[in-house]
Image (cartoon, rainbow, N blue to C red; front, side, top):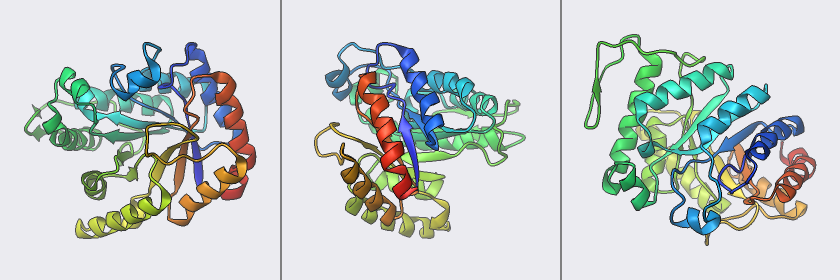
Length: 292
């Protein structure tokens, strides 16, 4: 099982260079990937955590990290697609993929904060439809020589699109979310399922449902890997945590591996570099050798 590390762009680190240094150190320590999260406004549970402290843009952070690293996958956990114009996002993502020599993976989701979605121009009730159409558009732009789309929200034809991603199949799209609708979206359209902080026993049930839905969609479930984002501690009530003691972390990581998770993305859930960097070192020394 691979282990990735959150860059804590969503934790209010006051020095943005600490976010980038996290990416550099993660690569040095052998993490397979680094991840950044997405919100535009500090609102709802984001405001409760950060107040007015900074929440940095994920693609900008990952672009800077791409220039400072050579090997790690650069992921989003997750981009809220209704916050983004899909054509513009497809171009930004493909550009970053080219800059990083094909290292980008996009975790994407529908979003859960109604006021933020409304502010960004997508009604809460339409976020699922917008997300599905955005996924279809990005795949079309990345793969088709003559991209065309005629949908509910967007229409285009007779225009060339560039650049393309490094990989001919496009940039991997990992579908975030824990709902049955998210799992069905992953089964139909995803290159992976990427839920957040689900207990291993609940995740096992979700994986079974993912397999059933994939087979109904004519897909091999083995082609839809499962990764999970999990904090070490804290987080919103009711969410599973990896723990802070090495033995607890190893046991919980192994429990994820046992149900079929291919990668865990660990978040220290802290805006203090004095906590972030030691946590990263501990996981590399105590957890990676046990489950890698």
